Amino acid sequence: MVCTPGSNRVTNSFLGKEEFLEIRISLMNKYLYFAVFAAGMTTLALELTASRLLGSFFGTSNLVWASIIGLILIYLTAGYLLGGRWSDRSPYSETMYRILAWGGFAAGLIPLIARPVLRSAADAFDLLNIGVLFGSFTAVLVLFSLPVILLGTISPFAVRLAITDREHAGRVSGRVYAISTMGSFIGTFLPVLILIPLVGTTNTFLIFSFFMMAVALLGLGLCAGWRGILRLIWMPVVLVLAAYYMQNTPIKNTSGQIFESESGYNYIQVLDIDGYRMLRLNEGQGIHSMWHEEQLDYFGPWEQFLAAPFFNPAVYEPDRVERIAILGLAAGTSARQVSEIYGPVMIDGYEIDPKIIDVGRKFFAMNQPNLNPIAQDGRVGLQASQERYDVIVVDAYRPPYIPWHLTTKEFFRVVYNHLEEDGVMAINVGRSPEDRRLVDALVGTISSVFPSIYVMDVPDTFNTIVYATVQPTEIQNLYDNLVHLYSRPDIHPLLIESIQRVVINQQPTPSSEVVFTDDWAPVEWITNNLILDYVLFGEIDDLDGYR
Image (cartoon, rainbow, N blue to C red; front, top):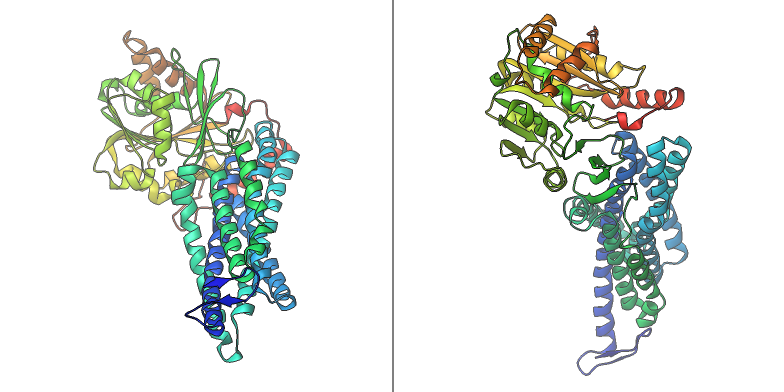
């Protein structure tokens, strides 16, 4: 059997021309549905991968997600309208596959063009240059318009090509959109669960781009022969060359950067400045862990967790602390300090991202034998635990946005139930210098579970530590315990310093009637307003203080 490219001339000793054409048409019809599936899968894959591309520089707040989803839907709307008109004017398979090829090619260009734009966004985020930041965010979202609009034309185009009689128009339309939606379902999970953790964001874009172009070129080969393929074969060649040129360039180029990587949860970055190792995640607004070979005090929030048990009545001896849980282990700064101050007490460290645990071991000496790192969401892991703790640290509030499910009355009830009778919870909360709404709301929520609450501001930072005790206590206990520890020459000076900072920087416990629940916790509403107000009316002296 011989088929001359671009024609229907057939030489075949077994099949006649009509039989061959029927087979070819049947194959093209089936392939049409596969192309629809591929377009639906790639569209959702682009949306999910876009969240990681932007999340590394702008965070993963609901605001970012709403922008991505909203604009993708607008682009798809434009694609549906354009596809309907285009298919009426040029109802040919060759036209549709050319559109598909251009959509795939444009998708592959997104990370390559966006990289320099996003690097300027990273610098703008460090300096909080809102003009550059907003411009970069908008520019990158606009980059998605062309590929998504082009991919959006495929479903209405396929409907136009697949309908051969009006009696089955509804059935054909339903089949096309069902297949497209099934592709979208696969595209929702494939990049997040498999591709991004394995090959990174840029390569994920390129994989779907090459896949889409391959589908389009094969479709062109079926309907137009090799000439149709040769006209567009330059597309994957150009992308290969561009990707090769970009493959060794870092995602960010921050001063002092010694490591960067991507996981299923985060963009991870490690900086080394004058011997101090710092862990930054995603947009980089916040230092999640610090390490220095010789220093243990970083004048941040981590040291203040050490003071937690001493809100209990005096005399409270340090050796009474036997087990601690840390929700938000990160790279282990708090675990290292606890081990130095309290000795080899058992520490269960919950960190949802297993790759951060690996980074902690490699770059932050997080290898304490008494530390049990648990790669699990803090609330889920704590709720399933059979252990009870003397101290539970909640340090999972990643600035500028925090996981709402760790702010509710139900969550704090889980914490309360896993503390000993003299147990204490300590949480790290972000704020602005003049806006304490988030702190007030959390104190109100915690007050619905714990009988006694104390608040201190970490000096020279945008952090507040909230302490809550299982048994009713009073602030005099902390003073009495500090006086007792002064008399103990064997006490580590960092413990003394930690309690002194609480005493000096203690704040009045606010009175708040706000109670967050699993049904109602407008945390992002508060943080969005907090950040916007501060950006518009505040001044920043030290962004690194916002840990």
